[in-house]
Image 1 (tube, rainbow, N blue to C red):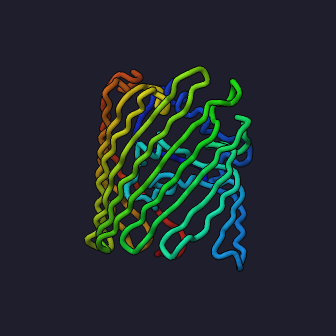
Image 2 (tube, helix red, strand yellow):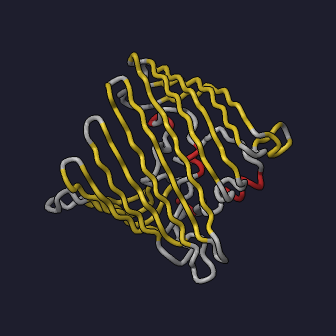
Image 3 (cartoon, helix red, strand yellow):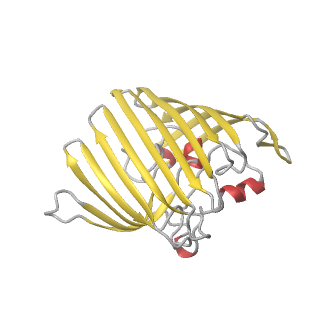
Length: 284
């Protein structure tokens, strides 16, 4: 499966090029979402080791559309966190309701390391029937050059609450910073909140709201504050199909969105869509 991240945000070509820096791989692994081997020693107290290419531990959303509450992806999913890694990861339970992990990676969104250094990931989670609180921290050189001193740091946390069987909600927070090769730092910070209400097995409603401050234009190519509101309806059929009508409105404090053939001339964008997801295999 390829890596597709539809966000509902239309970018000018120059900003797409800037935003995609460091987010590419090459060769046969380009369109492979994950490819790793896992070892779980029987006498190691639940320790699990994996090596290969795998999706990031950060973020509240995943690549697969049907596993998310909304059809379009969040701003934080698109701009604040990595997509995937290549390397080694280890995780183990600490108590009945907590776990911790360590990752040694080639970097963000690459298979072969081109920066000459390694990225370290630390993960942890507390989980009960009603509450799950996860934490992810990544740090390592991603910019390269000048002695490879351009260290990038990311802290990501998600609090998921399930007060009732028909209702769930989460809050996701991300803070990132990268030291520039010369001097100074680039910073980005964002928060997202979403809920899912399912009054019937065939129906769900999912609102989402976000705020993302790309203060130095590191992620989007424009120094700006972005916001978005999304409202998604989900209709589930008996044969494994999901129909998702969705309304989304993005807005910024800077001209960022295209209008017709004119790039980056408008400060807001509204998207209306109907997404259809069909699952082949056993219906769950």
